Length: 408
Ligand SMILES: Cc1cc2nc3c(=O)[nH]c(=O)nc-3n(C[C@H](O)[C@H](O)[C@H](O)COP(=O)(O)OP(=O)(O)OC[C@H]3O[C@@H](n4cnc5c(N)ncnc54)[C@H](O)[C@@H]3O)c2cc1C
Image 1: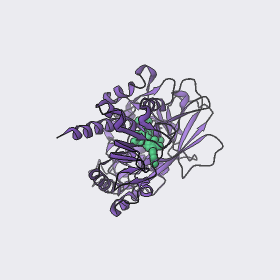
Image 2: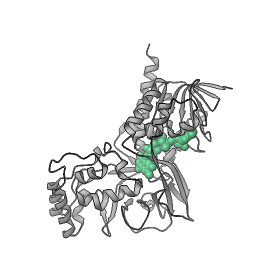
Image 3: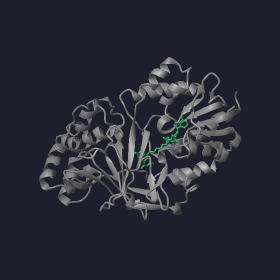
Image 4: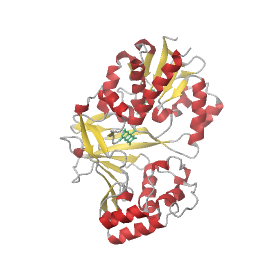
């Protein structure tokens, strides 16, 4: 029997759902018209942290706050004020050819031996993109075309094989537009001058809480919602004919930040075409493993594209969590080896940008919108997005929906 009628029912209390709910309150929507349902005991989603071996560990992987979006920072500082964050100039490394090279690779090829520099330069001079060749459609050929054989074969392809652990030609290329073009001239100059070239990557400077893990800001945001957030409350059923969740919450508008793939089990009356398109959405799972030895490096994180280790990234927490020791690793769960140490399994870690995804998610979102259901965040949009982007999008969606609802 339906217990509650709710104007805005938010599924999931990760950064997207939490921000959306707070932003509604900021728009003057009454508390009684908002409810967030979360499966876990704590808010924060992939951005949660736990205390492991006496210090914080981000159980969803390494999480750092980008400092570029003022609106997002102002919003987050309401919950964890600026003075509770440390700012770092990022040091990220890549293990390649038996040595640690600064990230991004294309800007730091000068750190290799002269012979290796020559090989990279020769390969960059011959890239298809530089020579004006037609852009290929397959992922593997696209990477070679854009970055040259050497960067593709030494780094980009092995790294992508590790993280996705699937046939790379099932991936689209539409999401690679952010990869910088590698300029032969700039790379040569960098090798001759012995210093980095190129633009600063994301997280050139980042913020990380002084005394907590990254999860603290979201935990506080959840707490501030009070009874508007129900934790330990997995969404199990959605009746589309009445917009009723778990048989007790009837929603006017549903904000979905949980994986659409869950809807296959939860909803018996999904149209067949939506069901078919949801089945096209793919995600990968990541295991986060803690290691207690402290590595002798200044890096905050290190990528490991090849090599004997199954993981693809190490997060050196002793370099960004004051007073901590050890590091953690991120590994595609299909490659993970058994462990006796701390492990957190993230079933939904990365949405995969397959060839089929853009069309499938568009069909799902268009159908959903007609039913006053809105996809939000990493799983609602099935998009790689960092938490700052998730926050920015949730702020925007709350503003848009509330202004639409007061239109005559
Ligand atoms: C390895 C890794 C590294 C990352 N590094 C960074 C970084 O450095 N900086 C950064 O800003 N971002 C980073 N991100 C991205 C960041 O984690 C996401 O942007 C952010 O978590 C997206 O928030 P969300 O709310 O959309 O999704 P999520 O955080 O996934 O939240 C979804 C929520 O829905 C809940 N849920 C799921 N199913 C149900 C159900 N049936 N019923 C109720 N609730 C349910 C989940 O428990 C979860 O709380 C990283 C992500 C990964 C995987």
